[in-house]
Image (tube, rainbow, N blue to C red):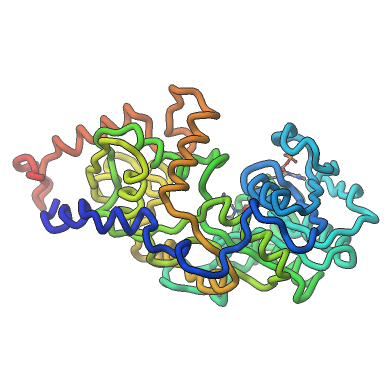
Length: 396
Ligand SMILES: NC(=O)c1ccc[n+]([C@@H]2O[C@H](COP(=O)([O-])OP(=O)(O)OC[C@H]3O[C@@H](n4cnc5c(N)ncnc54)[C@H](OP(=O)(O)O)[C@@H]3O)[C@@H](O)[C@H]2O)c1
């Protein structure tokens, strides 16, 4: 590893920046109301979903603000949550949304919008019964991730196969995620023109995230020792804490904010080194990073995003993947808690809700054994001449 880069990665400035020192939370002004303050006007809010990951964070904020919530879902996921909140039962996959009929709310928040036909049905039924439709979409709608700093006007994926567009179940739709989400956005906007908020989050992280796509890093770093880290630390990363997103969704409802918004940390705030050192700063840990280049990781069958979560090398068609513009959402009140808080709370949730011997690697990240194996290979690797012959060991 080049000496100057090593010095850079170890610098306190990097860790400080990543810890969120001087970030937007410290600015005076319009942080969206947290769940701890009461809203000036109590609202009736329907959430289509509400019991998985983003749903609970949103519901908790709304209840904390004094709003009245109604949850609509099948009653399968975490049915024990929110026992004092009204629950309506139905199934969007079978078109059973009768429980919504004849009811009125100030706003609906749709966290389960994957299938255009589902959104058409709920939006048609609710168009005259709510004043605002908040649809949780995704940055996956974008057709092209190669351009850094793209904003909400960038072209979205267009479905060309109408048989896909008419799919009826969430399970079927997932293979066409981005294009289907874009159609869902359009369906809501068509039924409630100028009364729709299409929110496009990037990677959502924090407590209750079962995907391990971020959780791997704080848990791994908190455990300490030599940590396999991808690339050279300079690849940009973006994410959003689920609670920041939940709070901002309720802020959009309370303030009738409509339009299309990317919802993720500001482009350029973190690169991989800033994120990992920032996480390290949140714990008492002897973790030390060994940065391993993409070519070597490939030889070990380790892929970006899956085994090395969050990380996407910022090259070629992914040059803009972790550099989406979020200026519009920030201007509309989206704020970000410090990375250290997200990291600590994520580990606390992981420790409380999972077995002590929980191994990463099934959903995302690496098992300890696999990581040790790759690190060993890295340290023992031979430099390879252009003709493919091994030479002496590589000096680090
Ligand atoms: N995670 C990320 O990094 C990420 C990134 C970008 C965008 N997003 C978007 O963010 C949203 C997050 O979703 P979430 O899962 O956290 O939301 P959630 O509202 O917390 O959980 C999903 C809810 O949908 C309900 N549900 C599932 N299938 C249903 C059906 N057929 N009919 C009625 N209700 C149904 C589930 O309850 P039952 O099972 O009991 O029905 C559950 O309450 C999604 O729209 C996703 O596309 C996520």
